[in-house]
Structures are given as structure tokens and as C-alpha cells.
Length: 241
Image 1 (cartoon, rainbow, N blue to C red):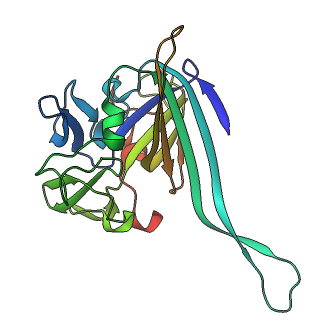
Image 2 (cartoon, rainbow, N blue to C red; image 1 turned 135 degrees about the horizontal axis):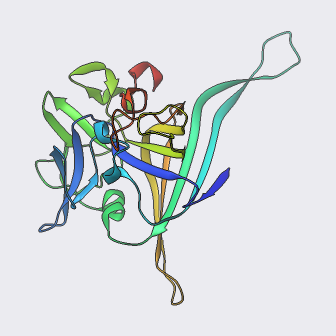
């Protein structure tokens, strides 16, 4: 496990769909799907905007990153040695920040509005989005596995979960290629905790987990202060899930 302070890295979050995100209805306090640029009620912006300032975590105090794999012992008749075979990746990232609002708690244990879910309203949004028919994007209820969360407009790709990008080093220019970026696709939210104190600011920790192989890149952006280049924002292939 590696630990970074908030001044060491920048962390960005988006959904796994190019055009749709998740927001909070400030009247009903329920989660809804939105398309477009979003506003202050947005919780997770569309994947095509990953890297823009609005997708960046603010007031981050620490980032815990653990990258590993789950193995299974394997043996063959006639051989004494026991080997190992990798079953799946196992990546976990915990982001600790100053507590500002209830948005991540909403994702973890909040309520999805009727008409914005693939099932019965009232479930949280920790599993991201699912597209039932073209243009009909919903907050999924956790009953659909990653390989079945298919992007209808690109049937070889999945919309499951969220996407995190950790920028260790920004490029020397907005579209430069000398940066360092780690992209963790298809994350789900596994834990949200709060820490209160009389002597310091209240803090919130959000833990994301992923079983898809992370990607390492150069932090290139499509334009000044824009989203990251296509390698960082392209949807995950179903064969990689």
C-alpha cells in the first residue's frame, strides 16, 4: 500500500459513460441521472469530462492506494510444485478529504429517484450507471454484473461503476506527455466514513475498489484545462472485465 498526502497528487472522478452523470435533486434529496455539463448538484460527472477541474476532488488530505491481485493455487498430477494463477486484479483506493457536503454519502447509502433506476427506486448509487436502451441511462441497483452493463451505442464496452484518475505529476504543458497518471476503471464504492473532532476539521473517507487492471499514462489532455486524452477516458472493453 502507498500513501500520498493531498499535496502530492490530484484525484479525479467520473462515471463510466461518456455523456451521463449522477446528480442530487436538492428538493427531494434523491439521486438522478443527468446529461450535459452538470452544475453544483452533480456528484459524478460524465466520463468524457474526466480530468477537467470540475471532476477533481477538493480539500484532499490523504490518498491510500493498494494495487494487487487475487491468486489461486494450482497443482498438476505428477508434479510436486504448487503454482499460482491470477484470478483477478484487486485495487483499492481510499481518499480522505475535508467534509463539505453529503454527496458521497448519497452515492453510498442514499436514495435513487423513481424514473432514474433500472429497478425499484430507493437504492444507493455505488455501482454507477446502466444503459437499458439507447439514450435511456439509469442508476443501477447492483443486480447487474459488469459484463451485462453494456453501452448500447458501443456494445463491446461496459458502463459499470466509476472511473478514478490519480495524477502524480502534471505535464509541463496542458497537452504535454511528460506527466504521470494512473487510471483505475470500473470502481465501486465500498465504504464511506466520517471523522469528527473538536480540534480539527471534520473529515470524510471514501473507499473505491476495482477488479479491472489499472492503466498508466502520461497525463496528456485534449486541450488546455480539458479532459485527459482518449486512453484515459475510453470505456473498458467487456473482454477486460
